[in-house]
Length: 102
Image (cartoon, helix red, strand yellow):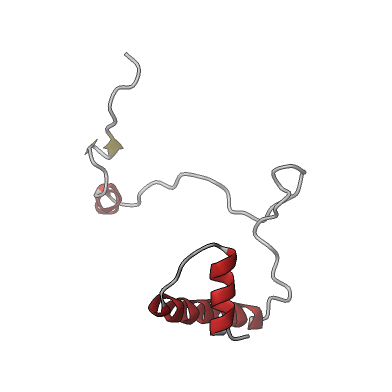
């Protein structure tokens, strides 16, 4: 399904967005790219694949196929140092945070 220039103009009017002709052309290209991506996703065979989550799991008791949420220790000190490299403050492999409660 290709998005036409008239589709872009109609959507822009419904959204009350003023688009220049250049913006209309760019928007048409971007929307067509999104539609192509959706077509690719719909073409994937998902028979036999169980869903990872369910929208009602927050309200009903539904068994989800998720991995256990467990902390995994770093295997080596080099690995730990790599993992901690983004920490703004750390010492001996621990995050340092400002005191919140005195």
